[in-house]
Length: 274
Image 1 (cartoon, one colour):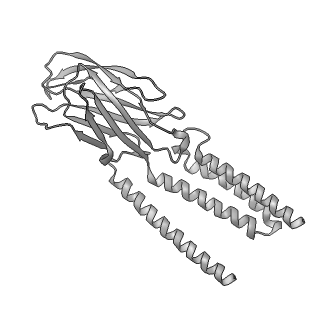
Image 2 (spheres, helix red, strand yellow; image 1 turned 180 degrees about the vertical axis):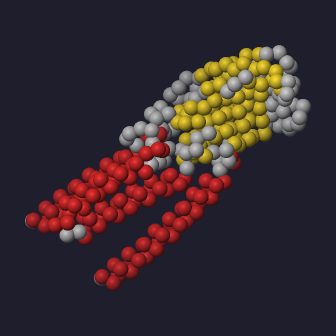
């Protein structure tokens, strides 16, 4: 039995090492291939008719289900030279109603384009979840933008200014509706290295919990338990810069391990006395 246990333990250890190497390789590949900006073409474009709107995604809110961001318009050189004010409407996304902002456009002599004087703040509501789901707080966006007055844009740019996330450009989709509004859909995913780090830390803590409960002598338990509690909550500081609120799923996992250790030690001592 002891020999069988050693063989099983060796196989499991090597299997975990292989899984970690594979997960780390995939996370690095995905992170290194991430682009700062994604573009979607809506039709043929050339120097004479190039126009676009740019969506920039910034930090996510600590408790509310949305990301801060902004929008910028370039109407190209086919919209004239007169300054205009454009009303930009984002469609309703539960639980939020539709939102409207305004952007002033001026003619730029150097580029010969009618474009915005500055970026206009706009929030982008995620379809499900919130930051409290950390580290599994990746988000999906699906909304419609309408412009008044509206040109026929030839390009849409999606820019990511949040270093903790990345946007997979191959999953960005933009459609022009018959009413000349634009449906925009794209995901923003948590840095896979952050997810991997959080999962590995929790799994490692679980292994140490198992070792304390089943293999440590009774006289060494007080020191080991105290060290485990302090070390476990110190783990949070490693990822503290990525978390904006308390508690998250990561905090609940740490709390669950603490309770599990206390309960397991209690059962062990009770069984021993009985």
